Amino acid sequence: MKTNKEILSWAFYDWANSAFATCIMAGFFPIFFKQYWCTGVEASTSTFRLGLANSVGSLFVIVLAPLLGAIADQAGAKKKFLFFFALLGVVSSASLYFVGQGSWLAAAQLYVIAIIGFSGGNIFYDSLLVSVAPSGQTDRVSALGFSLGYLGGGLLFAVNVLMTTKPAFFGLAGAAEAVRFSFLTVALWWFFFSLPIMVWVRELPPLHQRNGTTNITAGFRQLKKTFTEIRKLRVVFFFLIGYWLYIDGVDTIIRMAVDYGMALGFDSSGLILALLLTQFVGFPAALVFGRLGERLGTKKAILLGLAIYLIVTLWAMRMQSISEFYMMAVAIGLVQGGVQSLSRSFYSRIIPPDKAGEFFGFYNMLGKFAAVIGPLLMGWLSVITGAPRLSLLAVVVLFIAGGAILYFVDEEEGKRLALEMV
Image: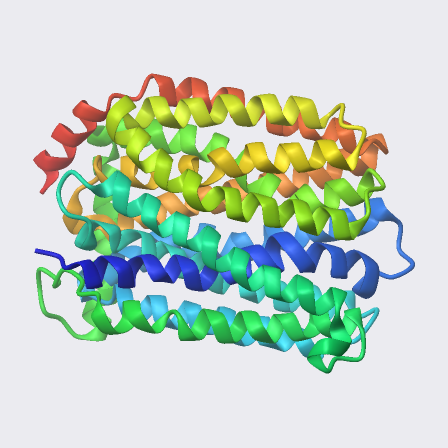
């Protein structure tokens, strides 16, 4: 029986790594990249460079996620892999502090490594949900993680924003130094709040005790076996295709929203405020969506969130003022955590529990493959059309297609097929 300490310790990793997702990925990095590291460069070019960096960082997870997950399953080493990737993200985030003005390539390279650490760590964090969540409470536990992520990321981001607006109060020379210093605070926050999951969460033991080389060989065999058996898991297959499409839209909005607002001419300080609104609305909203999934049904709740996302995206194509950006930030905050957390819990119920690492490797692989296509396609459309608004058409299509496929996924059949594989 899992204790509340284990559940909270697991959820606090979301609190830890959301500092990177909020403060760097969605917040300061797009602005600083455009204004400081890409100074003097056209907006469309910097948008393309940012999209390319996001895409390249995700390629690593696409290539290796399922294999790493399979090896972790065989070795019972999910926590060890999690710590390695978290440390990779921590070190590269801190290193951004030392990148000088105009050095966009160095900044992009460190950002790519940080994305690898962030995305790679999430494979093993997500797969531990199967070990931590009590039966019948996966929606609630998954939502707890995302809600703490919104709160923790939002709190640190609020402090960092205050640092940029009042740098002298913190003993900093100016806003630029404050932003650079924020990269150090993210690294410290990420490392410190990762410790509870390493200390108090217990993972399921491996079925067989092997040495390191044998675990790698067994991981390859497990991965090969899953590919041959995938036809038996048609529910998982169709869910992953739908998830791949709609999470592309979600991730693209997270990574490119601030850049999009800047391309429309909105002031960066206003965009940062909008991002803070999303974080603090997202904290209670994710918890509410966890309960909504239990009462309405997980799939129906996800589809509701996607419908709101679609409306907001269509609205964004005609947006004229920063006040509209604020309203859209609130709307996104209401559904973003819900779509993410319920997708994770839905998936955890239709996969074999003894292969959670490998299957969450596939889950994160497709999620990050979406993160390759979305930002890159958005940046490309911005360059060839010269109209940032038209770049959102790609996101619209992805929400519609992903939601349509999810509609036909049968959760009960998925549970039955998963149990047959155990």
